Length: 152
Image (cartoon, rainbow, N blue to C red):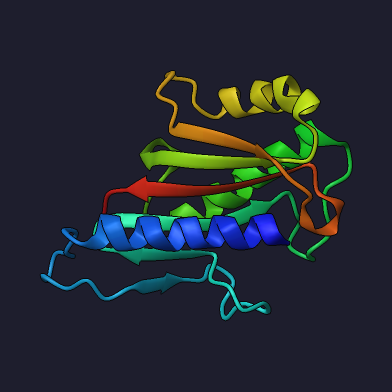
């Protein structure tokens, strides 16, 4: 859990720095909380828009009922990206608008298998900037991504 708190603190600091000059079309910096499934059950928003940036919370390979998809790292990576795609669609954006992702992976030995699926979601070769950290994840997950997207 310590790593997740560190990641949250880093994301909050990044949000503060990046939003200093980012105003919405109406000249405001008020956050817009993006909740594709209505109010969240947990105290976290799936995404928050500030100006022209959308910050997508750490996303696991869970189905709508909250359970992890079976099948290991590749199945989870596919579900993570589908979940992020759905969240971004609620904000009127697609995966092509991602500019930064952080990958939290339970075992870095699975990095090549995760990358195989990840790569397939960016067929034009325009990959977001990315960092990776080995971490213990909630619910025994193998991979988690948090991302930043740009654009209205």
